[in-house]
Image 1 (cartoon, rainbow, N blue to C red):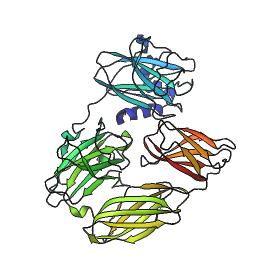
Image 2 (cartoon, rainbow, N blue to C red):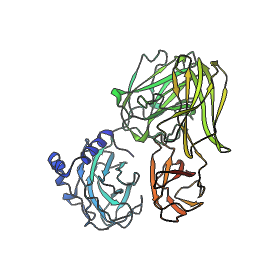
Image 3 (tube, one colour):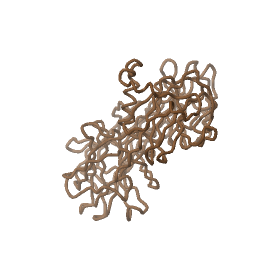
Image 4 (cartoon, rainbow, N blue to C red):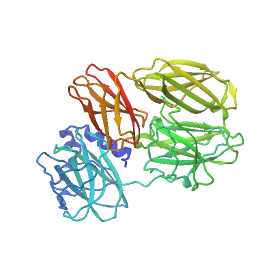
Length: 495
């Protein structure tokens, strides 16, 4: 479920305009009126257009509850309705509340007294735009229903856009992978896009913070050196932004795939576009390359393959950080090294500013697996982020993906059930100060975005956290006091 970048820019542009400016620049908005109850009246019909033109979809305070679809967190709350006629076999839609309200979006079919849900969304929380893509029948009418999550609060300045879902790119799945020539040093660069891509099911999870994002595919043939290096570049500094890439092998495109390696942000902080390499391949074997962008971003980019073994001085096979006896053990392994000088372990408490905490000499040149370890004996309370800087003898530096772990904090808590799927119970060891806030930090994406989930009152020790909207993965809890002190609580897994 996603919205194209051009459509999102349209919605953001409208949300930034004042009401007067909206009317001045978009006079057609006034003709679109949402209704208080399900209706196929012409006054409440919305247009489907390829440009995803934002149109008014207001839910004023006077609207009342008329129908509860019973899905995506809906309830017997005030709702607003519109409708449209499908013009393609797949349709996409985005509703932008333009307020701090949390919208719940439903698409329904049938007569107003006997509606059937087609699709629904309540993914992004307060202030977030809900986007959906779904199969449609050309010429069939569909009802749009919008409510505020868990309340009757108005959304009097909402905007909706409806557009035919663009077809996915030709290389949306492995059997239509675009071939990359790995016989020259990236002399042949392929122009690419991931716009309207869809996720590929049944492929091993690559890691690297992948969370089911839409992907596109490429293939190459391992050269006589047995080494390939694949790089990607943003077009004019834009592109899909923060992205990841993984290499797989398989007997053929429709056979089970084996993950070789994945990487994210090889070019960080230049453009967040990934590069990846692998040695020890069987010359002549086909290698499949999976590319995805985080946050369902879309855009154009360039990609190429190279046989240049010098492009990857160190082949890093693992990098971990775990708590052991009150310290953090940072460990990594390499499959091969070429002209490597040393490794530096860097630590951060905010996943933005990193400082070096230790250095180990590298092997220089090696064709055998090697293992390294460095102990951080003074981790900061709470979440610590680590990355590895590998420095070549000529000063070239490559940095690894970031890993995170929770150091022992001052407050211990009982978290159950763990893993959690719907609700997480938190029993704190001692009451928290008045005005403290409980926060969730996720490791599913690189931004480590923080989400305030509850404001706790005086002497509060027992907390229930709704985790249904969280993407599956590992999360950490921490307490933020009124004075700004952050105290770690514990970690849990979301199924």
